[in-house]
Image (cartoon, rainbow, N blue to C red; front, side):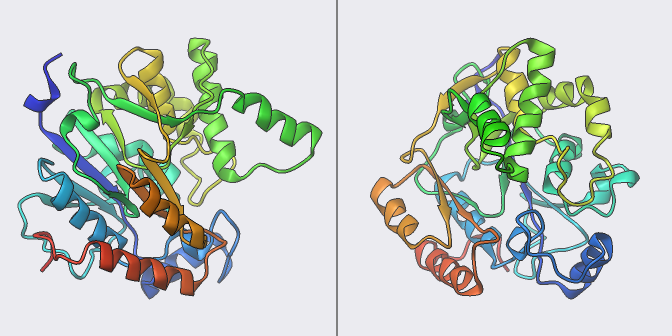
Length: 316
């Protein structure tokens, strides 16, 4: 395979404006109740404080070599976004997802279809809108010299047994997030006889479109069984399945992360801001959740404004 520096590398985002009344009405009709503050469907899953704007500022500053930027949305467009910019393309859910899936408020399901984005490059990186780059990166930060993606995982050598002990012995329920990661790992184990204990690092990831499509095809029945999961559900299949298959097929390189390479900042945790400054990671995520309050979100927005004050070329 050719060196990835000779390849176009695209960037795909998922984005939603959870503050939009029209979107809120549609979601509330779907979940059957006006408010749900569970970990699965809390406000933090959809809250919008223009994180995408700051993520794009980080891209312009630290990864200007990105070719095209695709933003996957549900009939929404950020008010500040310059749609005339040649790098930017809005992709609606209905452009890539089967009708059976719509409307969809479940990122775990949406992520299975990003490879269908028209004209998406073979080499692409994927991010949620709250994922940012913190230091200069090159194409080889995401793709090795042979062009294969670098899969970044948190090292969890006993994860399979830890989850089993927690669930069966301690009788503690697992989070939806942990269940869906396990779902992916079990499917790959059944197919390849390899169990990947490494946990997704919850940050920007690299993929080959061809491997993504191949994985989607070999697990098409299992993925099709989740089409009706309009919100997060226990049988969701987390996108780490694409990284696990790439590793099993020897079409990727594994790198375990630490806090200097990938940092997940929980915005409700004051100490996480100090850790971010201490470790100065390559990548970081501003993670919202059911534990965060509006004051935490306001602080996070102020933090990003201070860290990336310069308006990017992608803004009006």
